Length: 500
Image (cartoon, rainbow, N blue to C red; front, side, top):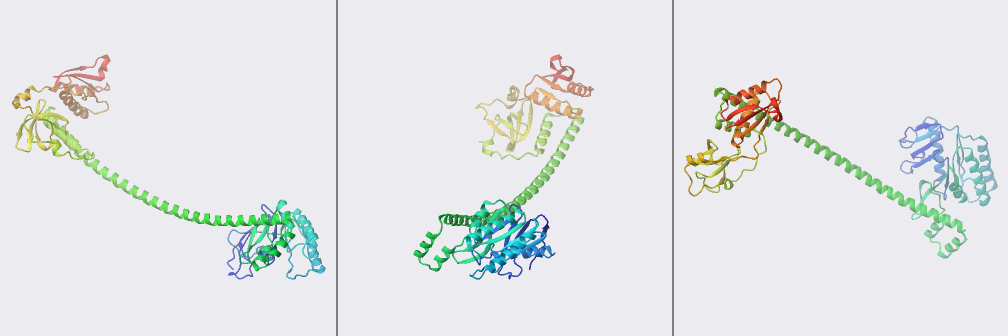
């Protein structure tokens, strides 16, 4: 039976999800969805015969008894059933077109017995209540019985043909209309219970589909009260709106499922991209770390060379050696490589003695003194001469038509002050070895920039840094004199040096 265990309660709440009558074959049964005891305690099911109203009553009653007996029920997971103190049913066979007083009496006897024994924790199932007598009296009697049962606050499901009960269920709080769906196109019921929609007789529609002449139909419609016609039109409109809403709900469900699948695919793609990004970032970090390690080792080697040179030559390192060491240090820095400047831009023609050139590696300008073959040139940078590879030079200006001799040109070069050269050097926080190296570089830049006076900020502290710097300045050939700063220059925390 593919039965499931329902959740049980004792508060009169019943909720069936796809409940199936246990005696109808599984391939033929139409599942039933019903809820009772929450927003409403009574359901009035209206509609024509053969629609499935009686089977609905029997399904609710049988599944309630099965669950109260400890049996699983043929319904989907999540169904809830109630433990009632009793289940009372008046379900008769109304297949005959002849109704007699004895049939009506039998119904009334059962109902009277139920009214005497029922409690607020009972479940009442009434089939065709008020049937078997005059329609006017039968509908009035049915409304009175249903109202009495409803005031008792027990749970009730009743079926009827009387249209008057539709208005009663609509107006009474805690009572709701229901009907069995009927397909007018095929003239057959679908056996689906529709909660909240009152039933229609569909007599005129069925007769028209079967071929009853139109004149007879029009005469019949004229015999129906205008109020009843309005009710039928209202029910027809509700039914049309319900079908439209159900179709929209099905389309929305399809769209929701597609959106959910799309969201899952997007989430997988996002996770994949994030994983790839993390791997690439990790690789980039490893590569950068390797480059930095290599640059750090090379820098340490350069510093060691500088220290060795300082020790060998008594802190008086040759200028071209310092420039070469700086060039190696610049090359060790792991910076993005710039696009190579075309040779046409560097050397629009073959370089000649007297041409003004620039050496980018040390950011210095000079003049070519002489050419050593086609690959090397001797260049005058201020008072210094260096042998440089021609490919490392950048052409700036041509030599005059009548250049002076190289040596004479070298002696008459006038230095001009570079506005970008610093006049102050802050050494606070550095150790003595680092401070001496920075000071040596700073003096070279200031000398080439034609600065006459520089300021070296070493702070007061213990005086070790100040003493070491002044001892170094005393031996430096470009330093003419030095002194501590005046009050407005930083006092004992600053040394002021005069350059030659």
